[in-house]
Length: 154
Length: 120
Length: 366
Image 1 (cartoon, helix red, strand yellow):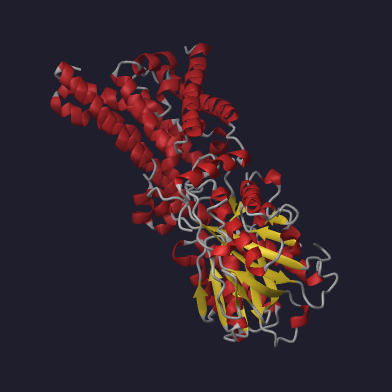
Image 2 (cartoon, helix red, strand yellow; image 1 turned 90 degrees about the vertical axis):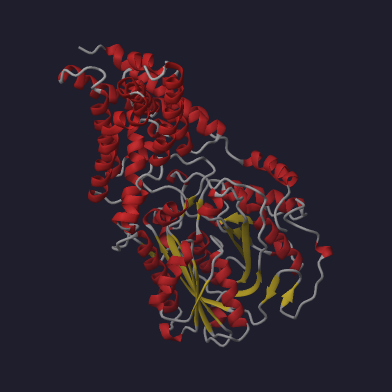
């Protein structure tokens, strides 16, 4: 045989369904909620520190808060804990900026053995790169529409 | 001083955004990487139509720490850039606003890879 | 199921004396498996077969600089150990046949560099173990070699970083996922002139599988992708040899996992063979459930370790009289997967019979 027809695949999928354990979506959602919520709350504590402890405005406290969270995500990845948080938390660990940091640090560490340029340098943004690319493209499109509507007066 | 409710809202909104992302992975079956990309873009769009700024006021880090907050920062930076520099700001504003986070990510990411080895 | 298993009626049975039916080779001189070597990683060492491996490594890096080098070391050790246990000097081995999962057969080629014997590198993804057994048996049975060493290896971390995400990436694994086994198996296949032959399990048949692609695309569900190939090879083997499933004490697949095993059973049943009483899967014997590996073990080392540690002993002791070992492979690459291709499967079966003079107690600690 070469390749199954669409019909055969459909038939097989029915059989497959019978034996495939269902994705525990409800449990995953609860875990994502708890882990994602906890990381966000930790972020809030950092933000409050910059606002009340350092006297920053809520707006200027944003970048340093992100930076601290990126540092924490990197540290937990470095000592080998973040992948375990991710196994439990799923997107609850991936979606916060600590997960963004994990997605940068994990390939950087992993491909260090392939050298500093084509290993670390090139692979660092395998997951984070697309996030930046599409984030910036969308933001540009949104900004462009705003520009067209308001003439750039914001 | 910060009130307890600030933390509660951060927890709830941050958690809920993650639940939405988790459902995208489990129900629509996107990969985690694609979901991250999707949510950054959604954040940028939500910011553009004026939904995200109120959310950050309400939930603080609950809205800014998850990735949609990154999309929001980019859009905010672009509108700010446009109000200061006009058309040029459309190009410069996004990364200007994200500059600190990205630079920190690169420096910390690099240093971590120097200091640590993967455990497997 | 119609796809995987075509009617036996439509193929022409032609072949030389050693080619039976459609895809089966008969090894008339019945090459013997003189000895095996099983090197397992630490997590595998904590599994059900932990006490049966020749060596359980303390960590997954083995004092090397990279995981790839660690896998090479494991493969070298497993093959050398098999040769040594068979009572041969490395130089007495005619050929080495090895396979693994890495790009361009990274582990096999570098292990062969050290083993320094003429080398055939083979690729069948996780089916390398039985593919190597077939190639080795052909060489011995055909009179081209008197002793062939075979080996197969896989390593969780080398496989993860090549096929999926970096090992420290915080991703979640779906319930259909299997866990790539860290370890290597080696064996020494000898011809009938070997003085110890009466005490060795004998390889009688090999069935070379077809590439079967049902269209599954999820790399986290390889059991489903490979089950049609496993069923196809098993059914073809039974038809080619005119045997029934119960002619075997055990028909054991390589790394289908729970889901793949159930699917294989159903597919074979559609072709009229009830595998229920004899079918098992090596991937279900590497880890305990509480080791949280979801659907079971996968990787070349799954079938290689289970055979080298446990099945081989049982064939020597006579506890298993006739075994059909069917290692299964998912023939995809990161490139083919990213380009949207489905995952083709393959399976190679070898029939192995117990030693002519079974030695009781050979599997005392089994």
